[in-house]
Length: 294
Image 1 (cartoon, helix red, strand yellow):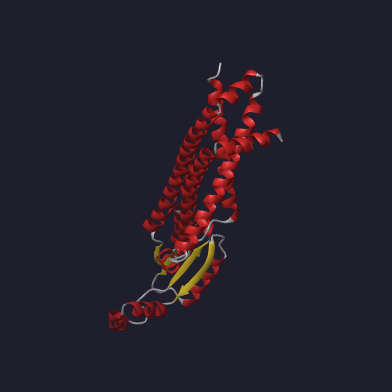
Image 2 (cartoon, helix red, strand yellow):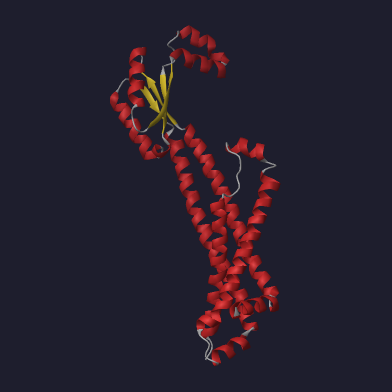
């Protein structure tokens, strides 16, 4: 009870500094939350791309329909394969004609087998790294009977490079934001400590333990962090509802997925991170002040 009374008194007497520290934490968490929403939506977009990622295996001329169906059935049994679509020569010609009507006379002149039959092979989500796809394609080529096997090697590599770069940037941005927030909040709390230096010096002189002195500041830091996390979550939700939802159709068209708000688990992480930053900054500021006392 004594600790809580000291906490309430400290907040009441230094409400301005408490509000500034809370605002700094909230601002940092808003930045992190916005970044998390962007990363989440980009990951969803990457997932959509990966779902459309497939291997196109074109049969060589002369391979019979029966053989094509047998090959399809054998490939469907492989653990890497999610699904396979068989496209006959006639279906390929129809597909091409729909997208390039000017080629219709040429295809008719070349005959029904102008375009090769093919298998459109979709791999499972955990089998779509560039190395895994390349290995799968090599096993296909080793079987023979193909005119060509294509999977957009350059595109696959670029997608995974982009995702790796995004992850690295996310980690760097998060670490830099947390460090900057710790620094700003610690310096703000250091001003509060100096404003209460007479009280702290008296406590030290009468033999108060470091834990007794630190306790109220740590609780204040946790409260600042939780309040900052709550403010950040509210602002992020307002941004999501007020801006992203209104741009829903445009964003869904551009990204392939609709923008989503942070799940409950990530909101909880924001609150915990805010509390940890507040407590950590308070601990650092008070310890630095106490270290300078005789």
